[in-house]
Every structure is written in C-alpha cells, then in structure tokens.
Image (cartoon, rainbow, N blue to C red):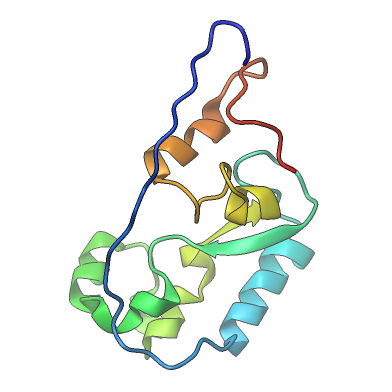
Length: 139
C-alpha cells in the first residue's frame, strides 16, 4: 500500500430498472460521432489525456434509458444542445454533446472505469496528484 494513503473497499450492489428496449444497435449518428471525436478531432481521454484505445461514453443519457427520459426536462437541463435538430432520442443520446472520449481503462476497467464505480469516486482520477495512487495497477 502506498505510504500516507489508506485503502477503501466497498461492495456495491445495484438494483434498478431500465425501460423495455430492443437490443442495442450502433446508430449511424453514433458511428459518425465516434469517428469525428476520435479519428478527426483526435480527442484524448478526458481523464488521463492518452490517445490509445479510445472509446466514447454516453455522458448525460445512456441509450438504454431513452424510453424512460422526460425529454421536456432534458431540454431545460441542457439548453446548449441544438434542440431544433431533435427528432428522436438517438439525436441527443448519440450526439457529440452527450459524449465523453475515454480510454478503455477509464471507460470500462475494474477499479478505474466510469461504468464500474460511482461518479464522485471515479472523477478523482482526473484531478489526482501525479504521486497519488488511486487504485492498484490495471492488469
């Protein structure tokens, strides 16, 4: 264990419901958004800045939540999104506005990925000192 640090272990069990939805397919807009952010703009990982093994993360709304979202509420919460272009949920969900570029580690890895831990814990990785050890090395 690193000096002057203490370990925090917690088992998190999540019990939520998703609205019924068909199996996920990659929309044309999602593919365009990912290509533009990763290949054209060469956007680095939002957390660590690396440009290796980058993926895009749905940030404000996930695809599986689309049929459970109050879109009028979303218009109020996200006034900077170009709502005049909105015809269906994927127009927001798969847009650049709703995406965060992350490396594979900060997207899906155990003890590092946004899909694997609560946001208030996950975000520390972006702000941590260079000499601070957040978690054990990724295997």
